Image 1 (cartoon, rainbow, N blue to C red):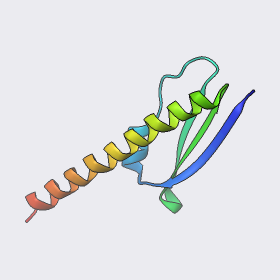
Image 2 (cartoon, helix red, strand yellow):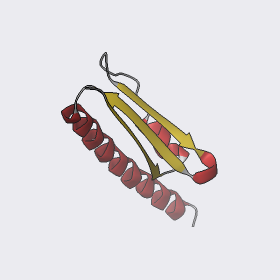
Image 3 (cartoon, one colour):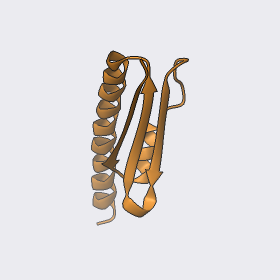
Length: 83
């Protein structure tokens, strides 16, 4: 069985760059793209099992949340430095 999954979530280019996948196992496809016009991230996953998809999504959302937290901290710090 081949499982294919695609989703779009809000995010900016900085978050997109932090989530780009550069190393995947053979048989696993993980593609991340960024739609600047809509400020959206798009994730496409193709794998051989639902369990593998669940693992990819779990890792992706953990990294997504961490990227948003880091970006918020950096922006708050930058805003504080410019005052």
